[in-house]
Image (cartoon, rainbow over all chains, first blue to last red; front, side):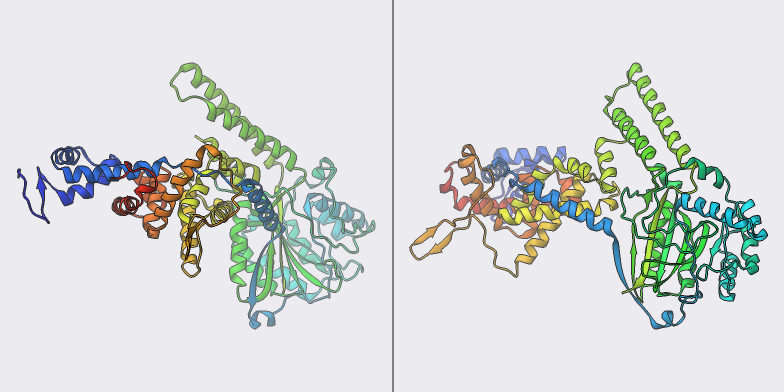
Length: 417
Length: 198
């Protein structure tokens, strides 16, 4: 339809109504309409002064809006933000805490390990494992059962094993949730004070024979320098009387993500359950739903010797750690407990090499990134060279990681409020 | 292929503050300006922009790269500012540039402004004041799209993604908001340039 319809509500110029044209002004300014409407709109504007004025007015407004200069950042903006970020990071590193409330029914069913009855030694880090291995070597001289255990590189020291603990270890080994081939080792170190060795723990030792801890002795000699936690009492030759652990400051936290090279690496997780605050079985059950290995059940005295602590220590795929922790959180949701956990921290033996490789990797990545986009043959050969180099570094990292059963450790604390 | 930004994002996910600061370097001023456009007050814009980056740092682990980092960042910016505006509804917040009306007439609010404002832009500042005043009269929805579109030049697409609205909605909001602004500014045209708005 052509011609002008002079009507207040339906003014029409060309193929377009003024009302429609006015709605299109904004899109026209932003060049956001298709060609057909665009030319119709321009036809309309050419002939309709009202709409042309409107277009001009809005264009001017937009122009005006766009003309104003940006304001500068406040002088201390970056410093202020930096401080906040540092503080935030520190808070995160200290511990990520959650408060959870226990139902009485859980408290009622306390740990299968009686409070205060035993001191069980937890292994802490590779060196400590070996340290124990060596200690037990000494000790084993007078004890055939233990010697056997050590010969098979299954470190197991047991003192005065009680029925309760035997039950516990049965419970562990009986759990089908942990597949046998995934369990490399299961150890219980139970001591009543530093009393005599009781050979009643055959069951435990026997279990251990099924598990392998290859290379343990070798590693002990190749890893000379694992710094012991300050509070660890190395004990006397012939047996460890007591070990207590300070909670170490967490640095070098490492994050496991799906796409990272670390995705298959394992973390040694140690769950400390204080004062039988929660039934150990509850935690075990949760743990066993994950692919874990090197499961160690332990009991230990930490700091305050009156506080009894049950310890579950095991390896878990790094990727699963967060999920395990959140599962722990939700499962004991209603328990009147505090759950504290930290991020996995790289072993001291692994850390420098790993950092070195990842720095190299980043360097290569940014070099690849910096290559101009081009089909040029010399460029693409350069790119493939860089990629090859990247591959090599990745393989180095994989090789490094393959040397260790686990590359980081993490602690979880479950205690009363 | 990984971009430099992705490398920085990955590092930031691991809690690397330096990488995070490098990552946001290019966006800080824009985030602050969006906040200033929305909130029309230096101190609030500062607080909001700080809050934006803290939130981003906290949640960057969850950033999956479905949208570009900047879009994600500006979406958080818009949300933080809208939160602040909603909070304000219950408070009586005065803008820096709003004049106090006394019986004798209007006087300018005296506020120590520690932000760098070179003399060269003094004239522009006057204009800015008028425009920001006009923008502050808009509704939250209109304010958001105008700030993003006119003050920061985002495309309809980007805005649609930032405020999680269909493009059609964005289009009509921008159109409406421009009309409203045109009318507001028309009444003030004598304040700056008689010829600017007809």
